[in-house]
Image 1 (cartoon, rainbow, N blue to C red):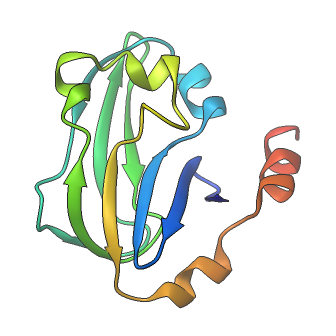
Image 2: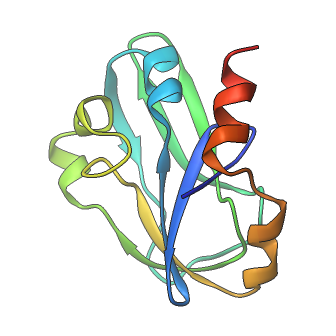
Length: 120
């Protein structure tokens, strides 16, 4: 997994990355009550807003860690948005993206660097 400073994660398999928010992010947000997922086929650039999470505390934008085309969304979250709180780094994934530039992954953090960031 790779991580962003804005608390997204991406796990890449071939040319497709699965994206979600980190455990740290979901704890900061509190109980997720609504998720606005992107349309399949939508093209996004690295750092562009892709998802909106609404919690009991606030609304938060989720940014795409890489550029590419959305190829799948986690439909289960429409009925059970709390899955992001329960399992943010596995079952609570948000979308899958076909990478247009795999070199963008180089700029992302590994787990130890991300852990250092959130402990500051």
